[in-house]
Length: 235
Image (tube, rainbow, N blue to C red; front, side, top):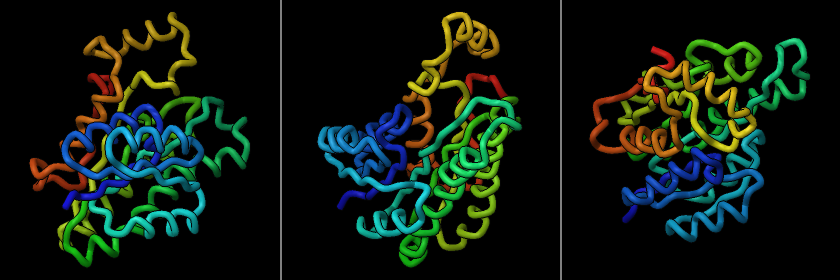
């Protein structure tokens, strides 16, 4: 029987790469999305998985959707949004949405799948944070705070769940070439590239490789850790 992995934000750039890589490694993947249902369904058909649509900021929808799957062996909390603006100009509604989706939603997903993992004494949770959760970013204060929260959540939950045989880790991407970063001009991209010691932009597959490693038996002695995938931009 295949192990089951649920990936939130599974229809996006990083999420899609994670779903594809996990499927290659033999996981049955639940492609979770909020609005891109047709894209999620197409991806699920292609990789032999399933698509699941729910609002990551709505706790009731999360609980209803994830419990309908049954036993989930791996949860990848990848869904997230960002907003580039000065802290004083972010509306309370946008600030709440960033926190609810990036942090509270991830915590609710974990809270939903944990009872089953604990009863089986087996499971893995991987949170996708950001280098800005490690060092903070000007004009992305709310985003940075939500991603820093994910790191703290990872470490605390790892300590709590380790006796139950559940591993909790975090992947912290740097600048990854996804649709979210397509707004940058060529000039801006070149300036960003100069800040990356390896001199190349990250790709979704780099994050997917990190997730797949942490989900594998090769990482059976690793928990509570933050794996940075940033080309040396943050050390």
